[in-house]
Image (cartoon, rainbow, N blue to C red; front, side, top):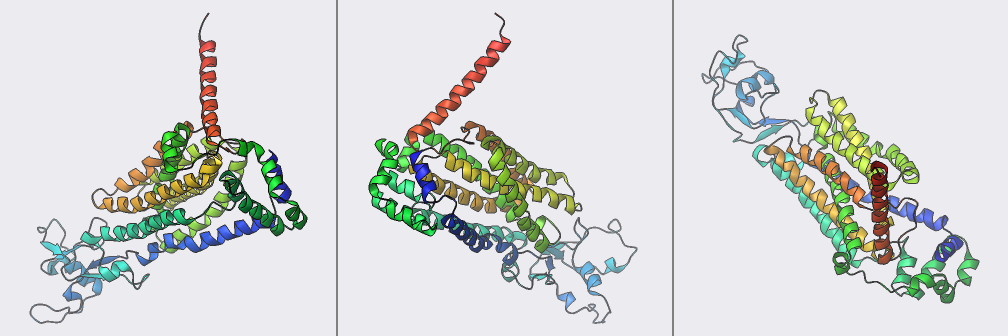
Length: 447
C-alpha cells in the first residue's frame, strides 16, 4: 500500500519506535505495582482469639503455674480440622483438663465456645502491620478485605473511563487516525516529527500535505465513517468483533486477577510466590513473540484460554500439602495469561477498522477493569463455598475459548482500514466455512 510505503520511508524501525516502546515499558513498571501492592498491605497473617489467660496465667485459686504459651493456648482455644488453633472461636471456660496427655476428644463432651469478643492476636513474624491487622478484617469481617480490593480496582475502572474520554488516539495509529478524521495538517506534523526523530531530516522537509493526501488517496476517497458508540450496535461486523473480543478480554482478566489477588493461597512464602509470578512473565513474553510470528490468532488464543482454565481447576483436587505442584500449576496459568495478553492485544487491533481501533481498545480496557473488580468480589464468596471462586475462575476461560473461533482469522493479513473491510472479513470467513462444508458433503455423498 502507498501509505505503508510512506511509513517505511520516514522510518518504521528507528529511534521513534524504540522510544515509544521504552515509554510504554516505563509506564507499565510504574502502574503495575498498584495492582499487586494489596497482596502485602492487606496480607492476612495467622491469628487466634485474644484471651486474658495468656497475659495472666493463674488458676482461679490464685495459684501461679509455670505453663508455656503453647499450653495456655491449648486450654483457651479449640483446635481446628487442620490441627491448629481455631481463628474465630475460643472456649467459654478454660479447659484445664486438656493439659492431661491422657485426655482426648472422646473422653469428654465438646466444651462451649464463643466468638473472639476481645479481638485477635496476630502472628507478626512476617508482617508487623497490615490493614487486616489494623481493622481486624478477619472471621465475620474477612470479606471486607476483598471489598477493599474491589474499591481500589473500581478506582482504576473509573480512571480508565475518564482517561479514554480525554485522550487522543494511540501513538502508533496517530497519523492514519488523523488522516481518517480529516486532520491532514496535524497528521503531516506528526509524520515529520517521526522522520526527524528517526534521523531523516531530508524526508521530513520534503513531506507536504499534497504528498500525504496522494499517498492516502484510496483511503480518503472512501466515505468517512463515524466512530460513535451507536455504530457499534448498528454494524453487525463491529458488534460481533466487540462482543467476542470482550468475552476473551473479560475471561482472561477475570481469571488472572483471581490468581493475582489470592496470592496467599498459592504457596507457603508470599514473597517467593510473587517473585515467581513476576519472573515467569519474561520467558512467557519471549514465547509469545514466536506464537505471534508463526501461529494463527484463533488457535493460539483459544488454546491459551483452555490452559489458563485447567491450571486453575486442577489445584482444587490437589491437597494443600502438595504446595509445589499447586504453585507449578498456577505458574502455568500465569504464563498462559502473559501469552494471551499479547495475542489478544494484536488480535483485537488487527480486527478493528482504523477509525474504530482506539474506541474498541478503550472498550476492551474498560471490560478488563470491570472483570478485575468483579474478581475481587468473587473471592469473598469463598466464605460460603471454599472452591466456588476457583470454579468460576477456571470455567470462564474454558467457555470463552469457543468465542475465539467466532472471530475471523487475521494472521498475516493487512490491517483493516474501514468498517466495510470488517464486514468483508466476516463474509470471507463465512464463505470459507461454507466451502469446507460443501467439500465434506461432496466427499461423503454418493452420486
